[in-house]
Image 1 (cartoon, one colour):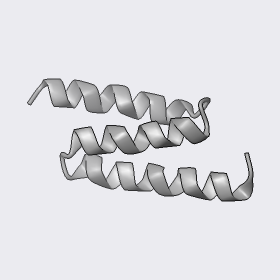
Image 2: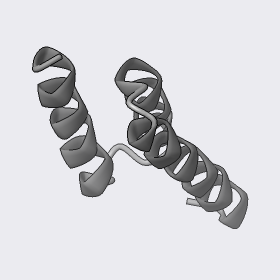
Image 3: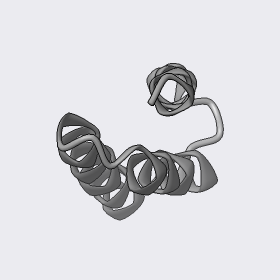
Image 4: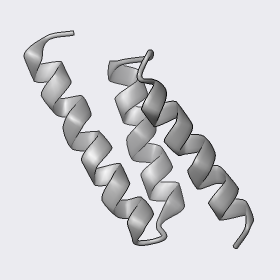
Length: 59
C-alpha cells in the first residue's frame, strides 16, 4: 500500500468513526467498506462493520 493509499484509508476510517458516534451506522459502514477496498486486510474495519450492523439491528 502506498503512503497516499494509507492516508486515504485513514481518512475514511476516521470519517466512519465519527459517523458511528453520531448513530449514522449505514454511512459509517459505507466508509469502513471504502477502507476495505483500499486495504482488504484491515481487521479493525471489519470488526467495526460488524459492531455497526449489530447496533443498527438493535434500533
